[in-house]
Image 1 (cartoon, rainbow, N blue to C red):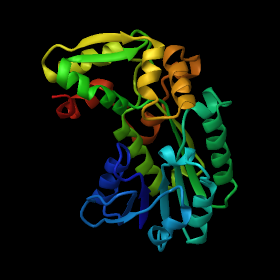
Image 2 (cartoon, rainbow, N blue to C red; image 1 turned 180 degrees about the horizontal axis):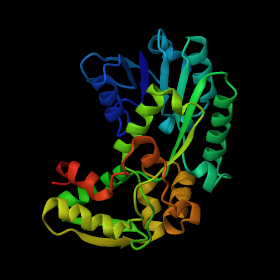
Image 3 (cartoon, rainbow, N blue to C red; image 1 turned 90 degrees about the horizontal axis):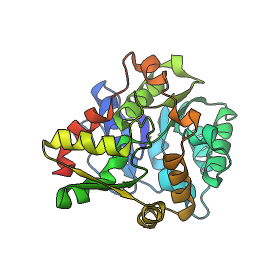
Length: 279
């Protein structure tokens, strides 16, 4: 059995489906009850309370660990999740980290994530670490304004990064969970090209078959909106990357191609598959 945390999210959903399709028994973990593919089961758990994972980990051979906001929860100790996994007999952990542990290692959340990476390496378990940059699915932040006003509002309209399709992250995660060849690997995951917010708006318009206007926000306007759903420090970190990406953050990684044997999906592909969200 393979345990997938964050099973209802943009990575967890396709990962759970991909594992089920190749006959793997999947235990889907999220905070709230959710539907899972045929052959899968679901357990509600709070990753900020690692002991709540015990029912899910019992009898599991592998764990996909996606922390999301749980890493930032007051009193959270994500290292305890790895300890719980080891104590439950889990042999392999695939950790979703972030490219920021390399490109901007001094931020508080990235220091914590790098410490978790190091703890996993020293755990005695088989492991693989995935470090994506920005996600194509972040464009869903614009879905409401596109539906209501046919507008994408974002800062730094002509500054791009090679954002990653979550489905590609899920596919790489599945390979790492199932194939011993990826044990001990650290993969940096990006899309196939640098793309700006203005170009993303154009791709959404093409998928819709109707015009979408781009409106450039100031940094202050963007931070005000972002802090409604994330800590101010994380909003500032994100805006620093979006506004002034480093050469390492602009690099198109070969790792998706290396693992999957195909090029990573472009943003236009993601937009076409998710166009219903913008209608």
